[in-house]
Image 1 (spheres, rainbow, N blue to C red):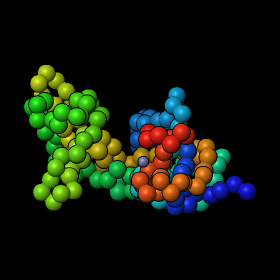
Image 2: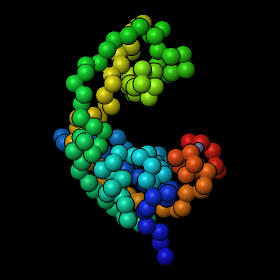
Image 3: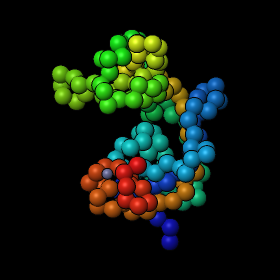
Length: 163
Ligand code: ZN
């Protein structure tokens, strides 16, 4: 009997994400796939909902409005900051994300969008914010999560290492 996707399952998927111009913006092609812990907001809300109840072998395509994917664009323009203002542990490369401390203690996630000379452009919007996206997903496998994975809130690799 094959397991269906429910909270506290580790799910391995292959996926392709397309924007509304049918351009591929993200994909696991050429990679081993992507595994995540279901029910813990490891993936965008709309996709998690679409995968609920599916089992290995399922092919699911779902088109999500921004609010169900990476959120609406917050209207705040990217900002240029000095490279030395970026925390030392951050790899300063376009696409990388880090969290800036905020007064409420939760921190604000920001994405690096450009690096030029001593200046770095950072954006508080996810690169796919404000976009309607179609996710084409192939469910490769579904298994129960370990108690350690549930405690950590994310999936671990095949040998128990952090991914
Ligand atoms: Zn962990």
